[in-house]
Length: 326
Length: 273
Image (cartoon, rainbow over all chains, first blue to last red; front, side, top):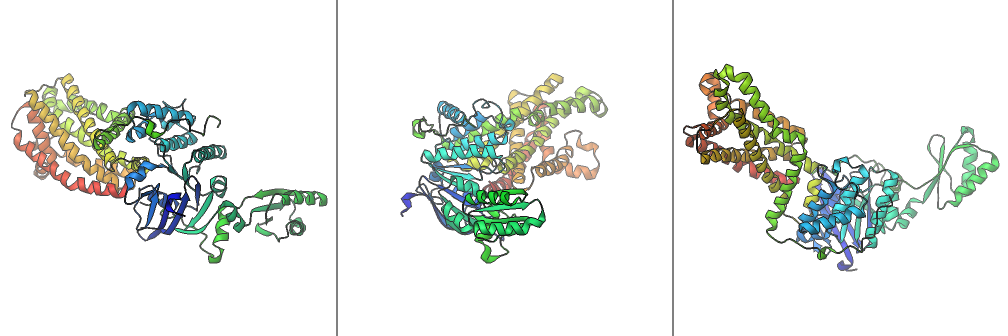
């Protein structure tokens, strides 16, 4: 593949903050018009990578081309092509929603009239028209995120960085944000999304890059990644501890795998599809075993990391390090 | 939420909007200065800093202490008004460091920096807004003084000169605040350090009492304190007397502060913002 097919191509990004290594040779590739999910825990280096690709930070080594422009050779051209939405909504709380958008539009050289027009369009698009002339400090968390995202779209950028866009949002608001991202992709925008949630990457991304301790530890489509982790986990907690043995046998028979006991009195076994759930429910009913908990869970990030890094145990625990140190 | 319409294909592309092209560097800085001015209007604390505070200080100093210090409140008003003007503006230089620190911390500067504008524009814009704020403070303090009975006895040119001197001096000083704002961990530290430094600089000067009433050790400090020279120059330019020597000394020190702290502040800003 040639560079022109890629809206973002970064090679060997290295960044140190003092003694801490934030990025230790990260490669990222995002084909034009697709969504790359960058998955990793706090301190993995996600934000550092985004800040470098957004020209906010100089790496110690490596190269990056965004929208056909060299990030370090022509940062000005890169800035004309990108939109950035941080994990904390970077809006000016003392200004109204409209003023925030107009300011960004004016800084993008829109005339006064054009800036007002563009701000009104975005307020409408993000359901903020009613709150447009209220100070952003009065907005709810979700509204602020939307305003922040709207601000990054003022110049209709070809490439958008969404740095943990839903961290701290409640699940229903998360769904709204996902729909907005899907809308952007439908318009042909390339999106680089960082997230701590496997579910989010799964819902939005065409490809996922998992990074940890500043290194890429896995890349692939969501399906490929999930097959590594082993799909979903079926979890059963009997009402009576004495039934644990029976349930264990039952789960082994249904799934063909022997269950683990990740917490006291809770059995967990990985399954490929939801069929196992139905079978288990039927088998439990047949034997009259009562349970207090029965769930089909997507592997959470911890499990992904545990699986991906299980060959080097002890590295799955992450200190909150200097992702934000600048 | 159903109000989000995710397809925006019907909206015109960026190139369909009319563009400004004049002096991008100045234009961007002025727009960001405009943002600071809007914030000043909305930030009650900072607005009180430039309106209520000088009024309060004038009333307290003139009516509470004036009679005891000068024998007559009017005489003391004539003496203390230039001092209060200088003090109010100098104290208000602290807030630029606090504000910039907050902007960076909250990520607002990341947004600015991800836009195709000069990297210095947010900083330049903030200092332009500071200049406007100081001018406002100077005018308000003078107006309150006039209402209370303060009378100038010099030319209009000299009064404007006095205002410009305070403006230039304070603007140079604000670079210390900017530098502090870039290097401290918490915005509150700028406030703490700034105020701590302001007390000996302002009260330890000729602002509130004439130097010859002070003990020798204090006179030694007061006489080298640049704020003394600034206050004496402004006092002379408003109510008469020789001003040139003090004015030049004040300008000289503020120039020195600018030469030392502006590069430090810009360097720290480049690292941080």
